[in-house]
Length: 64
Image 1: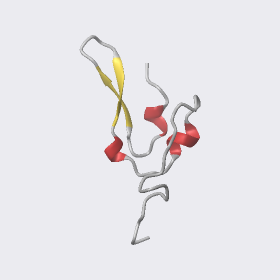
Image 2: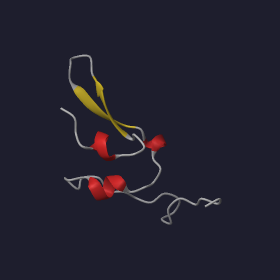
Image 3: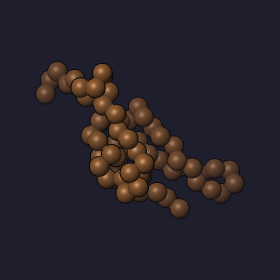
Image 4: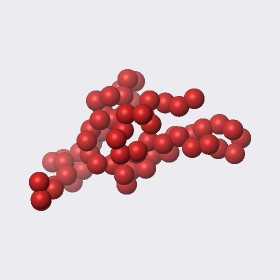
């Protein structure tokens, strides 16, 4: 049974992997996060609270 997290995140942060006993568990790959905030907007259960990085101002992209 997969949760919706693995479907709406464009960066693949939320991934379900098989355990040795045939079950799946949620693995969060935080290093993949592109700070798009999709997880905070799309999650139907509202159990993900997105917090902006870098002191509250969000990412600081110098070439954009």
